Amino acid sequence: MSKIHVSTTINGDAVEYLCEPSETLLDALRDHVGLTGVKEGCGSGDCGACSVELDGRLVCSCLVLAAEAEGRSVNTVEGMADGEKLHVLQQKLLDHAALQCGICTPGILVAAKALLEKNPDPTETEVRYWLAGNLCRCTGYDKIIRAVMDAAAEMRGA
Image (cartoon, rainbow, N blue to C red; front, top):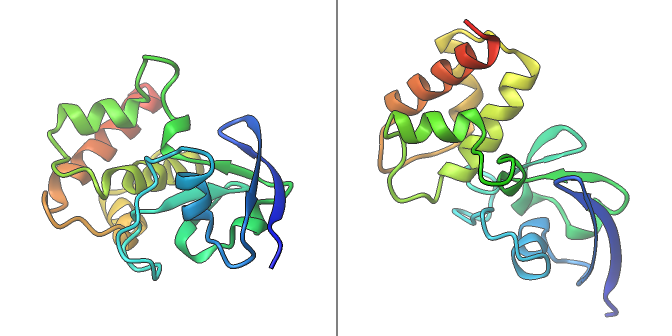
């Protein structure tokens, strides 16, 4: 089979890559674009480690074909910081010691950012529900939830 040429926007930048027809967006991001923040935890859409935004919609990149990014916008964890200045969510996860091994962290950050873009003042229950698709085997979830709630408050100026 011949490779597919994909032109897309990733974290605001125009990007082109060649991929196999059966290749996932996760693999293309890591192997062709060099964005290794996207992690493979399960390969079946169950853990959330590979979460990205595709045209503003939170998706598991292991379940999306790389060719489906053609003409679309992809946002990954690498696009969150502004140069050396961390996004408030990234800083709050550090402040609350809400990460350990780092496998789940990029997906949690992307998912939390997507939540706060849609709902800047979520309840704890809403945060827990939104992040339910992101599995963490190291920290438990309390520190992560507190970090997201703290970030939401700071982003609102509360």
